[in-house]
Image 1 (tube, rainbow, N blue to C red):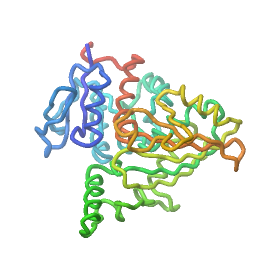
Image 2 (image 1 turned 90 degrees about the vertical axis):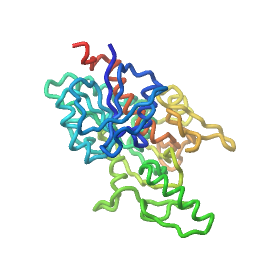
Image 3 (image 1 turned 120 degrees about the vertical axis):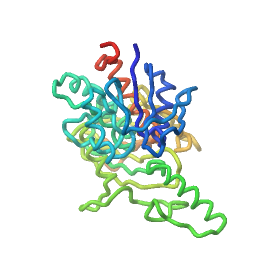
Amino acid sequence: MGYKVAVVGATGNVGREMMDILAERGFPADEVVALASSRSKGREVSYGDKTLKCKVLDHYDFSDTDFCLMSAGGSLSAEWAPKIAAMGCVVVDNSSQWRYDERIPLIVPEVNAHVLEEWAKKKDRINIIANPNCSTAQLLVALKPLHDAATIKRVVVSTYQSVSGAGKDAMDELFTQTRAVFVTDPVEANKFPKRIAFNVIPHIDKFMDDGSTKEEWKVVVETKKILDPKIKVTCTAVRVPVFVSHAEAVNIEFENPISAEEATNILREAPGCLVVDKHEDGGYITPVDAAGEDATYISRIREDSTIDNGLNIWVVSDNLRKGAALNTVQIAEALVNKGLIKPRSEG
């Protein structure tokens, strides 16, 4: 018997990717249900070669559903995830609502899947698992094998984040503004605080008291929770005029010596990583190259001579996939493959 899976937010950018990835990876589902708000009732979404009509979340009974993959925003998750989890359904949530709750696992499967085993053993567990921020996910896929090899002390990361991370309206704004520039129409900024077309904006999410933005704070706190609380992390998050895929320039300081050649060999063998690093024109990955792909790509691996045991790397990944939908599905896969969640239909 297979699993029953519900996807909440199935009409959004990430929800549609979840549906595609479930089909592409052959997730063992006997039934997949697309859920959305009442205004999207009956709207059609694709699941492999099938077309599903969206059902309304408010009227759906989760009592026979095994997994709920949720990507519908923090406020909706705050309201619905506990209700769904209380019905015995495992919620894998893509919002930031549950990431910083000590009771809730925050998972990147290539990095800390072992935490799921500890969670599953708890008699009083809450059936919610959190997906990390998109920038954090790809960063930690690259950092984990290097940390295992030489122990990371400090990370300085600058992100170059695509507009799809801010949703469909943000993608539409980039398109509209770009067209307006070419035809000399007025350029209006609605989704972003400044024009995004042919520009970069060093501001993602709200500003905090220390001058950091919430996006930068997320990378710091999530890295510590998922990888190692002793690592020092500082981040500058920048929105760039790219539709899909985030890029990151990462400077790493290690406790122990590690050469660029050693790091390259380690990353070539690491799960989820793909090294493309030729020292020639075009011998590296850009956001366009990574769009639609599952891997976390690493390029520009080189030693930093200004510090002891330092490296620089360039990390690029599709934020809608590994940064969100793929990681969510991989969490469900890990629970299945480890035998931690059985289909409720078997009972």
